Length: 605
Image (cartoon, rainbow, N blue to C red; front, side, top):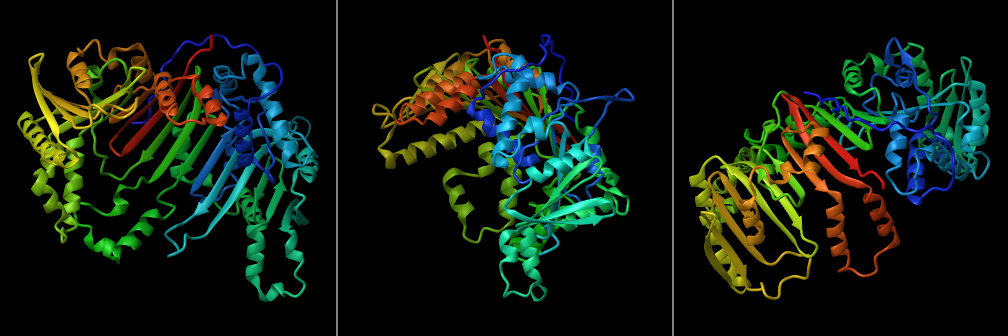
């Protein structure tokens, strides 16, 4: 099952983009990063706000770039700076939630200013974005590399890379590149069937008169590694380290060799990717030969000998391919990751859990996983199949009892953190499918803590009846001294209420869980409910949720213990404060595993 389309959420009308100045530092850093992805000699190219419709569907201009990439391409990075399918308005809405963008009308000018600075810096002041790049750049960029890690051992195999940027004016691009390309290279031109391939060699290449390059072909390879090459065609700017990669790309585009668009696997990935996206990363894991590499590393080695049938082959768990996309929607950023797995599905069934309903409503961090007991049992079976010549597992289980019994009875397991402004408290909540085994495990835990605490100065064990449940608290000898706030007090408390197990770092957490009814827990809060609905994550394999404002308060409390806080940290906090929460949801069906990451922003006052 692919990640479901995002639920429709009403958004306010967006003002048209206009112009104003000055950029915060973090945005400049972001631009330099984008410039590196797009880059020709470290030069930025940027965002023309262009998108169109073709036969009722959004036109995917980047397909023209994929026509230059060979079918052997195994990793693709796509940047959609043309902002298709309304992503221009979405970008304006998203950025206005952060400091420095008070009005959507400022976004275009601020981004242009940012890109102007990046281009000036990359060309030593010879050019800027608005005058020298924007007139001819369409805005999409794709980068592809061919990598086969299984072809060469012990090396990493051969690889080549190509960047393709869409353009609308060939003559303007050719003229601009004379200023945009690096001045630290010696450039030569070769006409290849009407397309000029420019090759830049490091200056040192021509400064070794005593070296016979013909007798030392590796010197050419070294110069290629440190060199650059580019060509301008009717629809694209091609950039690579080697001229041979440019020649091959031109041959692919001319139909003399198969392109990536003939790959069924890549076309399937394109169909899964949303039309309105800011970027995409695709990796053909099977084509990269990682499975072959792992099999060679383990098959004829001691590693392969100790892996028994319970563990399976290391390559069995690898996905066939991975697709990750980024889009903006109604003031939030969404990253979807899709993995096409082998036939064996991952551990953890996709279902709706009620565990978050029993977590206190003020929890600022919550993580949940399903079928934990099954995963633990499989991991232990794998370890046992390796052999236990040293008797390590035997020694551990003499003290703790069978390790399978410690968690093998758990189904859904959650970890929660709370912060009251002074101290943090945390605990584990779990659903159990065998209450007898769970009670026995708690007895083992009690015996272990009582015996082991002697080395730490002793422990006091107290029992009480709380809401008809036996609550057991362990107070260690350092309870009075404790750790400085916001660290929790050195205690532990557990309770087993029917099929619900609670283990807290203090009795307060455990009591809070026992006090929480179905309608008063974290799941019932507006913030959590909205986040999980936006992520379409009520049915899931597991999730992570963070309430960012409270998490920042906790971080501030920790930070006060460490004097000399840096200015960069304070600036980071300022932008993080624009987020309301983050949620990560794992799902999927059968051999498809999905991960959706949603960053929700707070509307600015």
